[in-house]
Length: 300
Image (cartoon, rainbow, N blue to C red; front, side):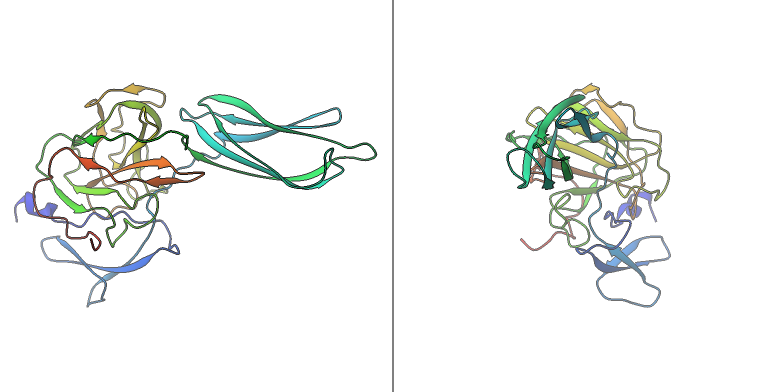
């Protein structure tokens, strides 16, 4: 069988574990190594549990800090990432707090590589201040509005095939990847920036399935606050660094088959902060993708 035919692999992204959004798909592989997928089991089929494919570790890079001072406590956030972070601090279970013991909630956007004071709580006379705090965050500034943009292909070569599109039944139904596109391509295909911006997060050291469902990836913050993410890249192939400005068409990496991936492909998605949550948003390429139609898309 020619090598091009071997690209007729379904290339859905998988999660590391089952999720509430998950579903079971059965995979069979013929004598030529071509995979097919079904919702019904068959002899020799392997069950695959699918769900939200994207996960990035930022713990320790966005930190809530407390600074006691005479008569109270001050809450600060340190953001070490190259992207604005929306944060929410909830202080409750207050006891002996000046101004009352009701819950206090603060939301703010903390700039890249910066520290911001969120709130201070003063102790009332007559006893020590007591409290509990809850802290959460999400990448990006929800106050920015995305602008219309048609994306050039983020690769060189082809033509390649779209193997799973928006609302795909196999793995493109979670909020972070609902509008993603999977494009089957040989490992080592040059991946380029489909839009200029700031590189805010990369992974470059994962082999095979690894521990990160996204595999090796590059995340780029665009001027309008949206972010383009290029997933499942070849180990050691990422040639850009966090904090680097990249231009349209600049080399980023090479395509691979890392993370929870069923075959060599590029998973490309555009996301924005919708309010303490990253979600994928619809986008269009600036021309049709060649090859066979997207046979895994959801119902129109």
